[in-house]
Amino acid sequence: MAMTLAEKIIARAAGRDHVTPGEIVICRVDLAMIHDSGGPRRVQPILERLGVGVWDPAKVVLIADHYVPAFDAETREIGALTRRFAASHRLGGFYDGEGICHVVLPERGHLLPGMLAVGGDSHSPTGGAFGAYMFGIGATEMAGVLATGEIWLRVPQTIRLDWSGRFPRGVTAKDVMLFLCGRLGMDGGRYQAVEYTGSAIIALPMQERMTLSNMTAELGGQAGLVAPDETTLAYLRAAGVAAAESAPRHGDADADAECHEFSADTLEPQVAAPHSPANAAPVGSYAPTRIEVAYIGACTGAKLADLRMAAAVLKGRRAASGVRLLVAPASRRDQQVAAAEGTLAILEQAGASLLPNACGICAGYGDALLGEEVVCISSTARNFKGRMGAASSRVYLASPYTVAASAVAGRIVDPREMLDREAA
Amino acid sequence: MRAGRAFVFGDNIDTDALAPGAYMKGPIEALLPHCLEATDPAFARSVRPGDVVVAGRNFGIGSSREQAAQALKLLGVAAVIAQSFGGIFHRNALNLGLPVLACADAPRIRAGDLVRVDAAAGRIENETTGAVLSAEKLPGFLLEMLEAGGLVPYLERRLATRRPAVPPKAPRSGRA
Image (tube, rainbow over the protein chains, first blue to last red):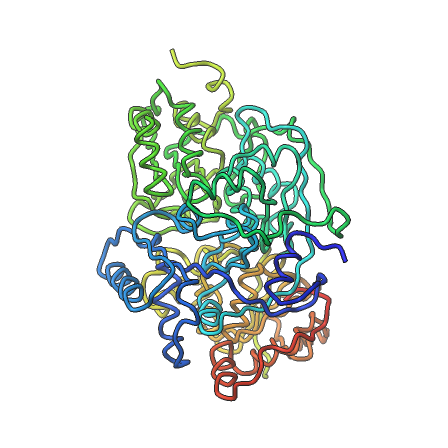
C-alpha cells in the first residue's frame, strides 16, 4: 500500500510493513537529543528512581545551549550537572557552548535521513529538513525514551504544503512560515506530519529548509519534512556522513495526503505583530512601526544563511542611532565561517553587538532580556507575550533581511529596496 | 472526584505564560507563583486544589518545557479542559499525571462554574448549569498511565513486572 515519507519512516521504526494514520504504534528511537535545560537535570532523577541506565548512550547527543554561558549560581550548577552527566555516560556526542542544538546536531553529522528521532525541545522538527521524522518531547517522556529506547506515536496524517514557482529575491523560508502561520493558524498543523514540497522548496539550500522545518512547531505540526535530495546529500557529505541506502527518499506518488497549494512567485516579505506568529501580514502593513532592538538570533534566524542575509542588507550601512542591533550566531562553526568570509565584519561595522552562540533571549533566558515597553524586531520564531523579557515588551517577527533593514531605518521597512540599491 | 471551580482562559495559551522562561532555572516551587502571571496575575494565588482550568483552542502551544504542565499539577489543578491542545503539552500533561480533556464545548463552561470531570469516561459535568459535556476519550494505555499517576510510576510498574510495552490497540479518532 502507498505510504507518505512520514509513514515510511514510522513504519520502519515500528517494525511494520505498513502503517495507517490514526493507529498507535511503538517506535524504536534512532537518535535522542537533549539539552541543558530539559536534559540531565530533569532526566537524571527519573532514571535513578527507575533504577536504570541509558538504553543506548551512543544514540544520545547532549548539547548545552540554554544556560550558556552561565550567569549566576543556579545556572552554573545546571552547567556542572550537565557536564557530570556527559562525563558519566559514553554519549554519542556532547557539545558545550558550540551553538544551538538544532543547528549543531546536523552540523556534526548526527542526523541522517530516515531516522526516527526525538529531541527535548519544541523546535526539534528542524530535523525534518533532512528527511528524518524528528519531534519534540518533554523531559519526563525523554527519560522514558532514555530508559527504554521506545516511544509511542499516533501515526499522523500527512499535510503537504506545496510551493510552486520560485521565491522572489528578498523572500525567505522565514517569510514562508510566517505566511503559513497567518494563513493556517498556530494549530494549522493539527499535530500531524507536515511535508514541504514543490519546485520552490526543492530550490532552497539546506539551512533555509531547516527554517521551514523548525517553524513547523509554530504551525502546530508534530514533524515537518522535506524529502532528502542532492542538496541534503551534499550537506551530509560536508558533515562527514552519508545517508543509509535504505533510507526512504520520498513518499509514494499515490499516497494519501491532504494537500495545500501555494505560489512562491507572489509571496512578499512577512512580519508577525505581537504576540503571535499567526499575526502575520505583508511587511507594508507594519511599515511605520518604530523599533528599538533588532535581534538576529536563534536556531530559526541566526544560522550562517541568516547571517549572510543580514549582511547583504547591512553592507556599507549602519543601524540607526537609538537602535540596538544584537546578533547571536546559532553555532560557533557558523560564526567561524562568517568571520572567515567577512560576513561578521559587515555586521560589526553596522554596529552589531555579538552575543554568545546560544538560545539566549529568544528562550527568555540569560541576562540580555528586553526591558519594559521595548519594541523589538526579531528573526526568531516566537513573539509570545513576555517570552523575550518584560510582559510590556513587544516583539515583531521577520526574516533576517527585514530585521536588518529595519535596524538601519529605525522602523519596520521592506528590505527589498535596500537589497536592490547598494549603500551609497 | 469532587467538583472544582472553573478558571477560564482563551485560545492559544502558551508555555511562556504557563512557565515563564525567567523562572526556569530554579526549582519548580519558585516558578509556581508566576504560572499564567502575564495572562491572569491572580490565578496562581486564587486557584485551589481540585479546581479546573478551561480554555479554548490550542492550549499549551510553544515550548516542550513540561514545567508548563507540572506547574498546573502542583498548584492542584485537577484537570485541563480545552477545545484542543498543543501536541507536546498534551503528551507532557499525561506523562505527569495531569488529566487533559479535549472538548469542543469547552467554551460553554463559565468562570466559577463548578465542574466535575471523569477523564476515563470523557465526561464533564457542569454542576452549576446542569450541562453534561463529552470529551474525546483517551486510548486505554494513556488512561492506565494517567491512573498510575504518570509515566514514571507507570514505567516503574512495567519495569518491575517486565510486561510488554503498550498494546498497539486503541481508538482511531481524535488526538492523543
